[in-house]
Image (cartoon, rainbow, N blue to C red; front, side, top):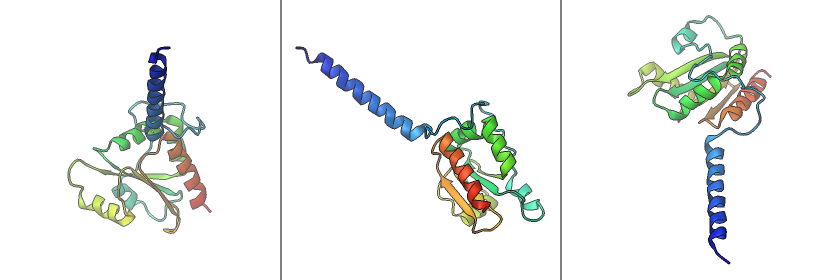
Length: 164
């Protein structure tokens, strides 16, 4: 009996395992399509405030604040923007339930106001999403991009927790 079929099957199993690991690391969490079937490629649909415009708003925001700490050069930030912020349903959820503030680090050295915000919130990596309620104690964060559905789950859970 030839060993070629067993070798081919072994190689295919290894390839399938590698593909599974890649999907787990870079793909979605697999929680299903509860949100996000309408994708607008490359277009951010979230109505972001800049830190400057947010600072000029009077009083405490009515809705929890969603801070998106990103960088122009960051690959996972671009995937987050495309997969979540470019999805019509996910963007509508964010726009309806949060005051979204995007803190974007440009290429090169970040300006002092951006560095100050990064230091204030203890930003250690990009992307970082922070949901803050009316109290500074009501804050949740996620560092990195775990995939579309895991990010949406984080936003839903954070909204529930900071509104309590």
